[in-house]
Image 1 (cartoon, rainbow, N blue to C red):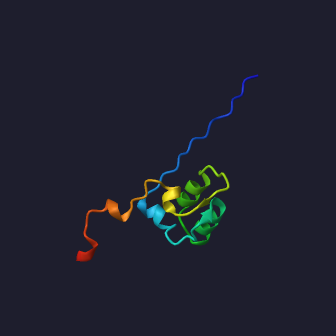
Image 2: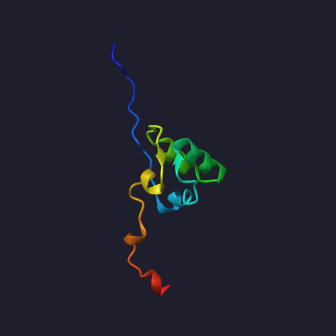
Image 3: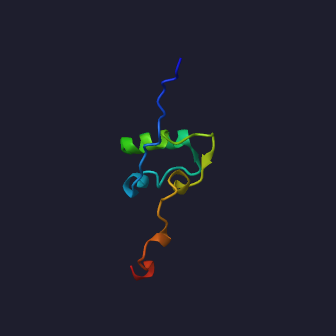
Length: 84
């Protein structure tokens, strides 16, 4: 008999707006703690779904960069902060 299970691929997507809902999360945090925080803080469903799609190995995440490696750092922006 053939196994007809479907492979679920990571369909999550992050934007700066979605990631901003985790900016005040209690870092470091586990996947479950981040999901709980997102729900309690009223983050959009997309944030919760993105967090749920992370493969959980029981690790603790130190920052948003570990959840979304493409999160832009302040070095990614070209303006001079001292001018503002």
